[in-house]
Image (cartoon, protein in one colour):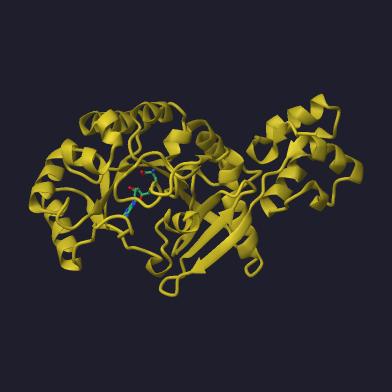
Length: 348
Ligand code: SAH
């Protein structure tokens, strides 16, 4: 029998409602959720529920699971990369980063990506499907379960949607995921400790500003003018730079949250004094932060990061121009922590 409900993608009150409707013990909902957060894979393991109830639940609800195919730990900085496998054979990459203020996870939102950015490994292995809200959450569940085997006090404090996929191209599932892991019954992560990165799907940015989810929005900018951006990022042909920046201003006005821009520095392509001048012109007066990231070379492109000095010089010229620009420390370089690289290896 196919099971009608995907348990990991449901809010506690939805589960409660279903149980009530079926005449089952709805007051057990909190117990069910605390098992889910602990990382159980089946109702069988929810040992404080009666056997009869477990069987009834098992007929109603499907629990999504995945296996951990690979776990790489950086010798340089302890960053951990996970490659999980879903039952349909799809790969999901997630990264665990350790900072002074605690642990942060970088999660994938789709199996692959349709956006086609020229410098990005995630898009090269193609797009297969969206991840469900429960499958996005499952990455946190699995990492927590694995880490707690050694450290019972382990908890995730921050999350960023900067893994494989374009979060705003899987809008409903991503919004549901964000609300789910904000719930005290699950991870209870505050929206202010969440970031969402997008290549700039304008109508969905507009939708997001109406959700009352005060997360940090990151925009993948990567170019200082529209012609260059269209070359690097096909999405710019549909949603051009000027309109994107206008919607960013609107986002800040409506939500009161500042936007963070991502700029991958590619030697000789977008890191010359001309681009620095253009960026200053483009972003002055914005309440924002610009993250400069030396591009991570991928196999399919000849893109390379500039020297450390060139990167610093670029940052300094932006700072002199009044921009709040910093060079992002790259973590996990020895384990290909930049997302998309492991999945692509497996798909070939
Ligand atoms: N689709 C979303 C989130 C996923 S990518 C987005 O476009 O924002 C997370 C970040 O890594 C994005 O800013 C993306 O542009 C950047 N990125 C992708 N490939 C990269 C590479 N080779 N080097 C540096 N940054 C890269």
